Amino acid sequence: MKRIQVGPFNRVEGDLEIGLDVDAGRVVAARVNSPLFRGFEQVLVGRHPADALAVVPRICGICSVAQSAAAANALSRLAGVAPPPNGELAGRLVLAAENLADHLTHFYLFFMPDFCRPAYGDRPWHAATAERFTAQTGSAVAPWLQARARLFNLAGFLAGRWPHTLALQAGGSTKAIGAGERIRIQALLREFRAFVEERLLGDRLEAFAALPDADALQAWAAARNSDAALFLRAAADLGLDAIGRGSERFLSYGAYELFPAGVWQPGGEASALDTGRIAEDVSHTWLYGDAPLPPAQGETRVEADKAGAYTWCKAPRYGGEVVETGALARQLVAGQPLLHSLVARHGGNVVARIVARLIEVARVLPAMEDWLRAIEPGAPFCLPAPLPDSGHAVGLVEAARGSLGHWLSVRRGRIERYQIIAPTTWNFSPRDAAGTPGALEQALVGLPAGDDAPPTVQHVVRSFDPCMVCTVH
Image 1 (cartoon, helix red, strand yellow):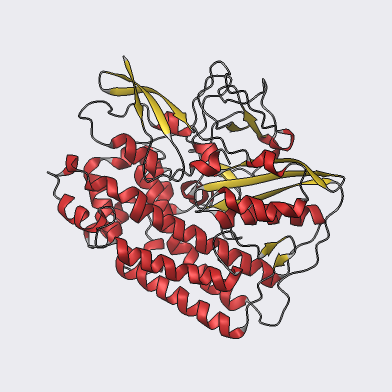
Image 2 (image 1 turned 30 degrees about the horizontal axis):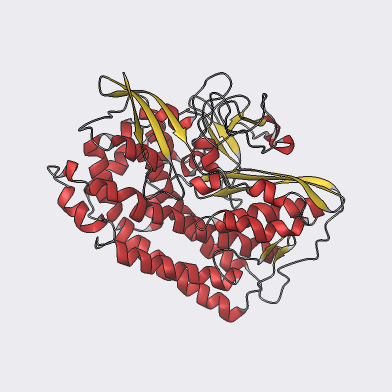
C-alpha cells in the first residue's frame, strides 16, 4: 500500500488537498485536508452584533449573499423581528439568484472541464465536450459568463451590489424595489430562462423538472444535444452514476419556503430537523478540544501541533452521524421523484449531485418569477430591528452547496461567541473521535487512483462543489 497526495486542486474556491491510501490501484482510505486557516469566528468576537453583516460576506466571493442571509437571519431572531413580506421576497430572490449562478458556474467552469482531459480522447463524446467545455476557450464558456453577468444585474437591483451586499438586514432589505425596477428584473429573469432552456437543457424548465425517473432522464438526454444532455451521455459512458456514494444520510435546513427542512436516508420518509442534534468534533482538527460541542457552545482555538490532526476543518455530525448536504439533500428531503430514482439505484453519486443542481435551477427559476410578481411596490421592505444587549440566536439558510448555519451569542452589547458551519464543513469533514470518515472521505474509497488512473477522483471531489474558504471561514 502507498500514500499519494492529490492537490492542491485547481478550479476550487480556496485550498484543498487530499491524501489517498492506495492498494492495488484502488483507494482504501482518504483524508481530506483544508489547509488554510482564516479565523473569521475570532474576528467577530468583541464586535457589535451588526458588524457581522459587514464581516461575514467577505468569508467568500462566491456565496457572499448566503453568508449575509445567515447573519441577517440570526440577527432577526435575536431582535425578535420578522421582515415584512416585501423584505422576505427580496431576500429570497437575491439568495436564489446567487445560488443558481453558483450551480451553473460549477457546471460550466469547475466540473465539465475535467471531461476534456486527454485521458478521454478515445471516447465518442470527447471531441464535442472539449469543443464546448475546455477551460477559457470552450464555446460554452463565454455565453455562460455573459448570462451570469446579466443575472447578477438582478442582484444589483435587489441588493445594491454583489458580492458583499449590506442590503440584507435583521429587519428585511434596505433596497426597496419600485415598479420600474420590477419590470427590469422581470426582463433579466426572462433572459436567464432563455439561456437555460436553449443552451443548458434544450427543453422547457417545467418539462425537465417533471422527468419522473432515471429511465426518463436517459431517454431525455438521448434526444437532445444540449450542454446538460452531453454531460449525461458522457457520465453514463463513464459509469459516474454508480460511484461517489457517501454517507447515505442527507440534511437540509429548508429553502425559500419551497423545499422543506429535514433529514433523509434510504428506506424511509424524511424526518423532522432537530438542530439540537448538531455538534462539531475536533479530534482530527488543528483546534483545541476533546469532546464534541454544539455550535452554540463551540470554540475556535488553534492547536497547530495537535497529534493526529490533518485539517483545519471541524467534523460536524448530526446525532453523531455523518450527513451530506447540498442540492441533492434538498431535493431528496423534498421528495423529488427523479432524484429518489437515481439514488435508489446507486445511492448518492456523481450524476445525482449534478442532476440535483439542474433540477433545482428548473424548479427555482419559475418560483423566482412568482416571487417577483408578489412584491408590492410602495409597501415596506424593512422594519426597525433594535438588537438587545444580551441573547443568542441561530440563522439557518441553504447556500448553493448546502446547509449553512450561524450561531450567535451576545453579552453586554458585544458578540461573545460566533460559530459557523458551512456546507463544505459538513461534506469535507475529517474523521471524528470514533474514526468515522466524513462524507467525501467515504465517497472516495474504492476509486481508481495512482499512475495512469483516469480522473475519477476529480469527478467525485468536484461533484460536491467544494468551497474551502467557507469551510474554515
